[in-house]
Image (cartoon, rainbow, N blue to C red; front, side):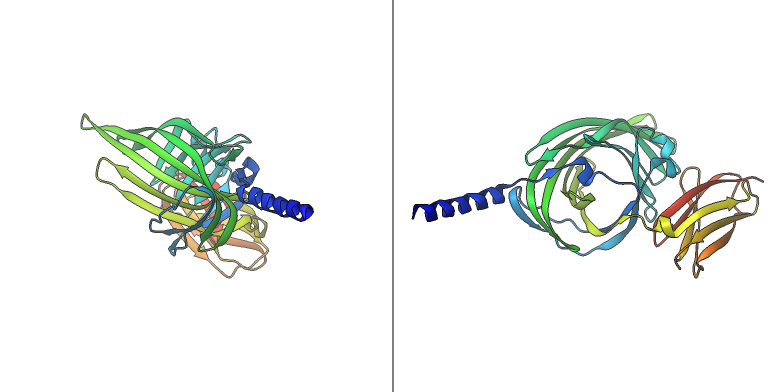
Length: 338
């Protein structure tokens, strides 16, 4: 009888320990990896649910696609030189938004973004994550940046509080994920500028939750609310709609070259493809503004050529971004000279 009782107690103890087992997020587990790409589905705000151990969060929702985001090296983007300390970037050709990060074995830092033709580098980077990170771990970090919009200079400074407030199972539109950790980001920041000699100051608070799982190098889901003194709020959510992994497109479109460079009227792009895919070319100016887009299809396996008429473009520096199925294969710099 004692032996049976002992085994029963051991079984109960094992189950209790298993239930209380914590999730630990690591750098290799969630840091962005160059060559991967993902799609996030956007939707309305979803209540993030409860904090704590062994939670089940059901965030099932439908939305519209936000386009494919490619994880690239900052140097491959047209404004990467503005973020000299970043070593990885997210680049979304649909929204024309790029985010720049520094990923190390001990931290993930936000170094700024490019959006609406605004280049916003951080002079003091924002710590997003520290590693390793487990349930109830927390830290706070201050940060600041400035950016130009027309003739006005905007200044932004803030504090972000980060806490691992729960772990468990996450259910979203693309599936069910176990051993997930939820991270809460509480951000307070001030935007300020001078217009017509008068200061314009906006105070903001953002409450955001992100769910991470080791082996998936992007938040699986996000939900946030934003309030400011000008009348907010704003809110929304995203969840992972597709995670492609290492970018196989780079193996199907290769050996890309452009000529003549400089050019006056036509720009020719040569490339080799090993799959019958549509190819899209986006032309952007030196500020990153999209000035021309062309899509061609029915390419054969082997060597192909696209000829683009750039005669209407003013003289200057431009970038040709070559994509297929929304995924960036390469970005090439060229000059229009007249």
